Each structure stands twice: as C-alpha cells, then as structure tokens.
Amino acid sequence: MYIVVCYIAYLAVSLTATVWVAQTLRRNGRSFLIDAFQGNRELADSVNHLLVVGFYLVNVGYVTLALRTTAEVATARSAMELVSDKLGLVLIVLGVMHFLNLYVFSRLRRRGQAELRPPIPPDARISIQAES
Image (cartoon, rainbow, N blue to C red; front, side):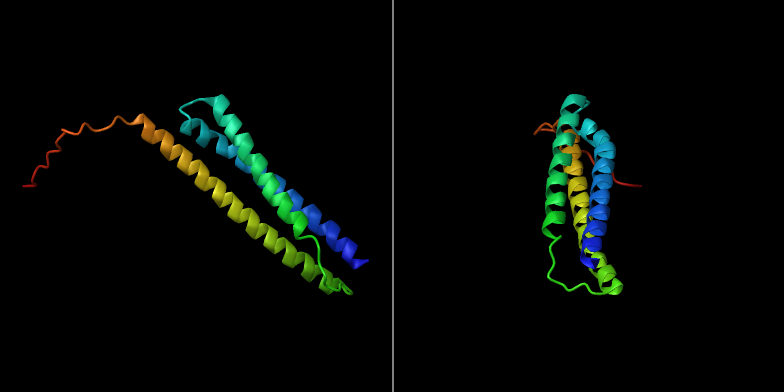
C-alpha cells in the first residue's frame, strides 16, 4: 500500500514543480526573447513556446522514467525516503533545465544585441590619450 502512496505523492509534486518552473520560464523568458529578436513579438513567442514544450518533454519524460522502483516499501519511513530521493533528483533535473533555458535565453539575447551594433571599419583607429 505504501508504494501506491509513494507513486501518487511523487507524481503530484514532480508534475506540479515541472508546470510551475515551465510557466515561470515562459512568462519571464518572453521579455528576453523579444529583446533578442529586436522586438519581433511573434517570433519571440513562437520560440518561447517551443522552448517550453521541449522543457515539458524532457522533464515529464524524466519523471515518468524515474517513477519505477525495485525498493521494498514496508514502512512509512521507507516511503518518505523513497519519495524524498526521487523528488530530489527531479528538482535537480528541473534546476539544470532551468539554467540551460536561461543560458539559451542569454545567448539569443546576446546574439540579437550584437547584430544591432555597427561593425568597426577595418581602417578605424582608436586613439589612446596618455594620462597627465
């Protein structure tokens, strides 16, 4: 009986955390993407949606793969320890995915800003004035 409670608790908390992180990334990543795509909201929203779908696929896939266990769960203590171990791994995966998405947002934004800067002509000279 404990194993069923473990599965239900694990799925409920894991999927809730996955949805919360994905929605946070979607909502707050939008402004980075709009900036990265020079104000093109349609493209930014499309890329944002694709990133969130990928985030869900990876995390829900991991959650379902990590559901299975061969551990004997005969006591409430062993049930709590099993759920805690599994949730800890899910939260680590969510954190890694979160930072990976932030890295992608940052790279897209940096690339978008670099495209806005005019290039320095090859014959340009930079004068350095000596301090007095």
